[in-house]
Image (cartoon, rainbow, N blue to C red):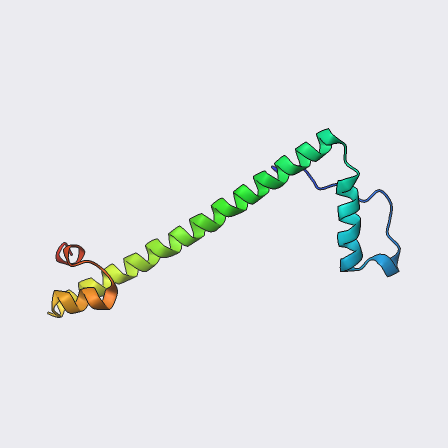
Length: 104
């Protein structure tokens, strides 16, 4: 199920010689310009919802990546600590704080 309102569809088929990216963009702008006020409000709300959704997904991906990197750093720090490497060196190498390393 699509959560977003579909973009306006072209009323008529476009001839093959006009079916290029630049013309597609032009026709899309023309279609949006011909919307009624109510349709334009709905279209803009749909675009905003889509941008918010995509922004949320991008933020979640970035956050998940950072958590994964932190877990890797903790694992490396644990291994270095078990090898007897000084905590200051481990902290400098992994970017972790000494309290985190001591807790391992």
